[in-house]
Length: 427
Image 1 (cartoon, rainbow, N blue to C red):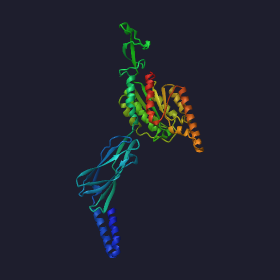
Image 2: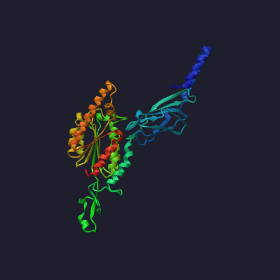
Image 3: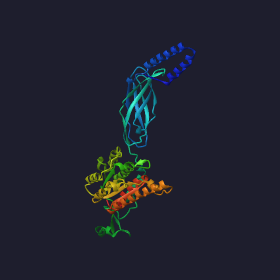
Image 4: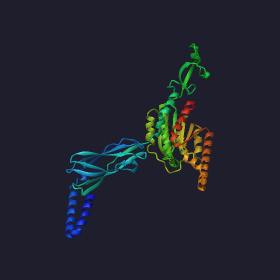
């Protein structure tokens, strides 16, 4: 049995009565105890309640979704209660407590709001019901386990770039009126020659059957293979701004998958550190984005040093023919972790893009000259930036394309690299 604030207030009134008469105070206290016991006895039994959680739809990180709990009172007394539907803290459940009144044989709904702060499967904890008596002097309380969960998908903040990238893709694919001549490698159609056309595109057989000189137009090939390789090790846990590097990499994966799916290309994914955390086989069309979203949803940085050879080996197993490989890692630790030799092995067989989120705070630290501490910090930042530039130079020597961009533009730059290679007929 639990007592309420109302009973405490009435008990405090007994202190005033005690000044007048001790015997009267004892009687008053005994009456309060009897009233509290009777009130608790008249409270609705929590065992008579049937709790059912309605399915919670998937939600993107940072967005809100309702969480509904249905309470059916199969007892003979009216339920007057406070209900706490507890979830994991990262699920962001509000409000904390909700009043509920259900008559015998009736049902009601407790509706809360979830606003998750982490990706993955966020589970419900327990439901605590505190049932009050008619006088609200005392209450019964019990915890009930009501299983439930919500799937929290990546926020996909980079989808704001999607219209721009699809517009450029339509230009490359010949779906707009203004075509870009001389790009791509897949035959599209024939048209009359105009000054400035590449003479190597002249179709002599068609020209022989026509009064005009006829040239072939090309479009980028479809059904190209793209492999997304994501480092989920210690370096991916470093925070740039408000988010870890891994979140920026996953956001870029989603944008690139969405654009590549529209282009008719097939996308595969592997995420690893010392073990493989996620793997998606080559998939094209509309299914590609859904499969990649489901695969990256539960990924979290692991506080271990990534094995680059494992990641490179998984990439080589995924890509049987020449493909575009986008390797998401950290240039800050590349010299120490062996990323460069692993990247060289991949670049020998595939078109390679190495993508890393740059930290703007390094530039700010390198410019500091306010005092001795600022000078030491600036020296450390300059050493880090110099090592980063050296790694970029080594990667470019064996033909890798390097993306080194801030988090807010990172996904856009990665997608631009894919479109540039597609426009140049490198895929």
